[in-house]
Each structure stands twice: as structure tokens, then as C-alpha cells.
Image 1 (cartoon, rainbow, N blue to C red):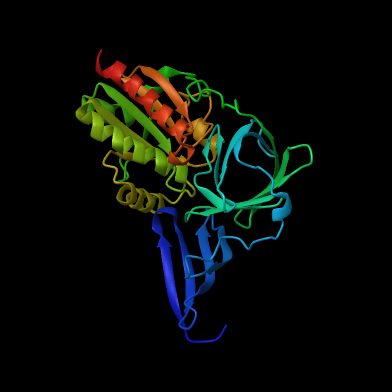
Image 2: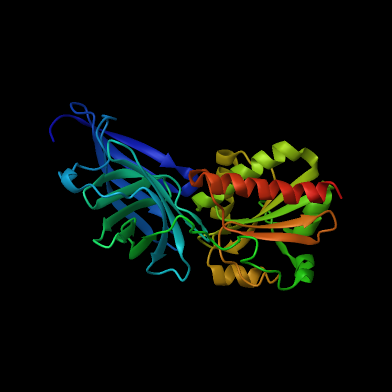
Length: 342
């Protein structure tokens, strides 16, 4: 491409990533790199291209319209590296534009967009934390065989079968309490580096309903869940208290504090957050013996005014999931209402 190029950056500080681009003064297009800190000195770099013209489609059209396949609907999905089935929700309009998400027991894949050409559906998303690409090919028997890429560091295959009744296991029944007494001993550093007991923070609130938020600032599903908690606190006021436990990608305490502060600013949270450890699930499970296992980020522990556990919710279905998101909110409200009214 010809013309004068100027440096340009789009930063995602809450996810510790940045798009470094150059803009062509003639075409207005951008090209450059996406740079993401993945922890322990592991920095991912991907080539990036952005087209200024918003009418340019996400994917080039493939002239296969003579045998356009029907991808729209609900599908039971088997990802190669997962031991639990997921759900695919696909919508396709008259112009072959596709919108979709995948629901899993650990969270959803948020908003995906793309198009359908013949027997091929392509979907993608970029949110500063993830760059996802899905290919789905309809088979002669009506099933799907697909590929999934996350950045330039992960690839797996997946298959899907149409299933209008596909459902995930109950998120309130995935993770169980292994030792409720261990709540008394949960002490982690606050943002000033001071050892702080989780139950002391909850007791200071005098709230009738309490939530321990297990999350990471690197996690878009956790960001969606935190926004929901902000909304719930606005609804319930002093009747609801939240304490966050941040599991971050590096052991650098100061870096973790910086990311938590960025998360606070980005989401608008106002509750105390403690630095609890590394995002590795085995290490997080060892740090939280109250649970049988940390299966997902986020995980929410609901407690009453006596700090007795009323439920543990694994994962989060974000707004891209539609009805699942609405029903999840209703279940949260029902549980909080019961504690508030005691």
C-alpha cells in the first residue's frame, strides 16, 4: 500500500493488551500488530488489519449460494479438548450474515459475528482479551464439523448436532462446598499489601446477602459477571455486599494490583478486592479449600448474614446468551431475596 503512514494505538489496559497500528492517509486502513501479555513473560503478537470502511464485511463472500445450508438454531457442541458438551446458538439473516455464541459450563464465548456461504459458516470476535475464529462446515448428514482458533496459540476441532433441547448442567450444582469452616481462614492481601480476612470485610458491611466473587481481570466472562454484580448492588443497596478474590496471570503483586485498579475503573466496581493468587485452577483450588475445586472463572459464592453458604455458582452466561442470561439473573435475585427477607 502507498501513502503516508502514521502510528496509532488502541489500548485495552484492563486486559493488558494493545493494538499497535499504522494508518494509511490515502486509504484510511490500518495494519500492525496485536500484543497481549499472557503471563510469565509470555507475550503474544499477532498481525492485525483494520479496514476503516464499516461497510466492508468481516469475511469475503464465497459464491456457494446455490446450496446455502441452514445453520440457524440450537446445537449440541462437542469441543475436542473439553469433557463436557457445550451449546451453540446460531442466527442467520436473509443476507447470510450470522450472529452466534457458544454456551459452556465455564462461561459463554460472548458475541460472535460472521456469515454463511454454502456449507461453510465463519464466525469471529475480538474484545482485547481474545481473538476467536470459528469455521463450521455442514456435513451431508446435517451435522457440523468445525475448527476453533484462539489467537495464534490455540486450535481445536469441534462437532455439533442440531438439538433444540440442548441444555447445560445446573451451574449451582457443579461446584460444591468441601469445608465450610475454611471460610474462617481465608486471608489474602488487599491492594495495600496487608493480609485481610475475607469474612471481616463481609461482616463490616452488615449486609443480609453476601457474595464472594472469584475472578480474574484477564477474563471477559468475569467482566460480564462483575457488571451484573454492579447492577445487583444498585438494586439491593446495603442489603448486598461483594468481596472480590482476584486470581491473576503472574505472581507480580504490584502488576496484579495495577490490573485490579484498571478493572475497577473499567467496570465501575466499588467493593474490596483481594489479590488471591495465580489463575492456574489447581493453585486456585489449593488456595480455596472451602470448595471441592475451582472449575471456572468466575465462580460466585453466595452467603447469608451469618456467613453460611447458600449456593455456589460456576461460570457465567453473559448478555450474548439471551434467555440464559435473563434466567440467570432471575435465579440470582430469587436467592438474594430469600436472604434479604430472612
